[in-house]
Image (cartoon, rainbow over all chains, first blue to last red; front, side, top):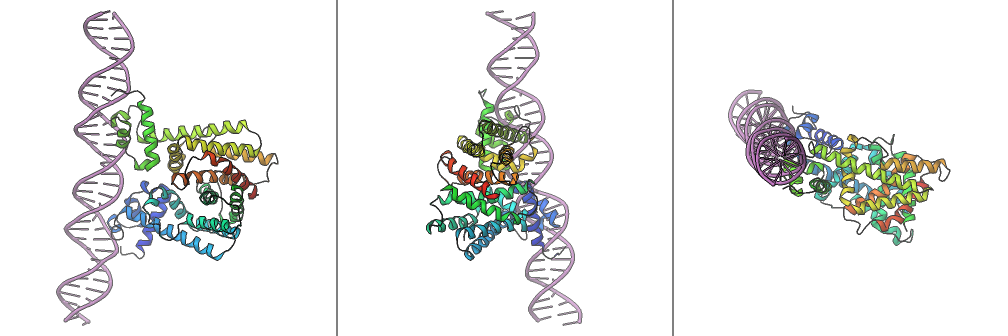
Length: 189
Length: 189
DNA sequence: TGTACATCAGTGAACGCGCGTTCACTGATGTAC
DNA sequence: TGTACATCAGTGAACGCGCGTTCACTGATGTAC
């Protein structure tokens, strides 16, 4: 079978399976079957399972960071920046929940092995907080702690959605979540 | 070797290893070696690796929920309850960070297989929010969403500590985190 | 245009390692008489 | 108290399955002449 887009089918299958069962819970046979190719064919595109997982993770992680950084660059003011970032997180989740879940689940094992070029998502949030503190927009707070609070509000909501506790898309919830994140940071100081 | 407390040594070794490498990243040989017994001896106490992981998870999860429920029962008023719960989460983390991390990491694969008798941690938080809404203490908010925000503030902070981004014990940070959680819920409405 | 050849994404069988599990056996402890 | 026996937490070697990886081979496509 000389199908077009084999690589993209492998990536989609791998992301969906990794998101559902974790990297260790998925075999090469699973991915190959789901993508409709033989196991051997997979090795024409990747050195092995590890490289496949690492490349998928690193690429998505880099892209998330880049999109967040771009959005922060377009906004000025703490509230606007947090609002835009929260909205973007929600949009990323709605766009591809499996990818989002894969990043959340796999970060424990894959993040240490990822070259963190550019700005990872957490660094973008930290920078927005640091700017706001520097400009006197918000009280002096521990930047790392504030970033944790902002990320927590968004990511835990996404996890609740993954577990089926929250229905519907996340984007409509973004304004409320942004208000919550901003209020939480303000209350930290 | 007829050592005393073999079971508790196995549990400690398993929790530490599971927390560090994930359940799938740890072999029976690893656990046995770390506990100072042979692989075969492990099967005198557990039917197998799955049961070991499931029992450790279920017991810790149940205990976390029970301790949180007890604490909520001692407090009245939304702010006091959230404050006590956040402090308890921090204390649980400081008491045994590996156990806390194990619960966070493994919930994706072990929570679905856990009989949720009594009240799991998230249900305790939800009930505190629901009570506050019913009593008119806070605005009417989506209870699930509010619970996600509270849990997110605490758990993401704990994760940042796991990743080495935050130093020191969490208990001293509990008051600030509680204020953040309460403000976040208030801003949701 | 036809022929010979190189390239390369595919196949599927085979391999070998790691890991969970089993099992015959050991030796200490408790108990019946 | 001494003897025979049951019990049971241990040991460590062996087993077998699953999975990642390899490899000889296939057939389609592109290219040189």
